[in-house]
Image 1 (cartoon, rainbow, N blue to C red):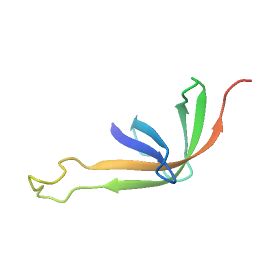
Image 2 (image 1 turned 30 degrees about the vertical axis):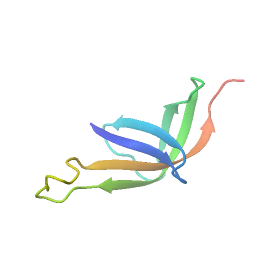
Image 3 (image 1 turned 180 degrees about the vertical axis):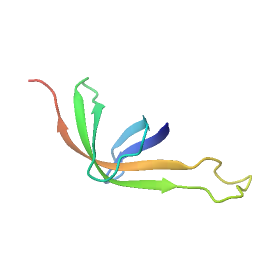
Image 4 (image 1 turned 90 degrees about the vertical axis):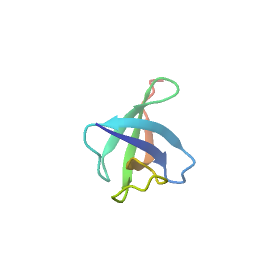
Length: 79
């Protein structure tokens, strides 16, 4: 499993960290729950990989990370 942070285009929107079996690619849609409990749809714009160089220096980050830039496209709330 891969943990990845989902964030909006302007880095103002932070949707949280989610666990993926495989990483999405640009154009993929991701369904997440909204604050109101309905389903929200996000489209993947790009995936950022933050690897670490080997050997790992004791003062550097110890784990690689992934962040996914998304655009909110729809709130599937029933009216």
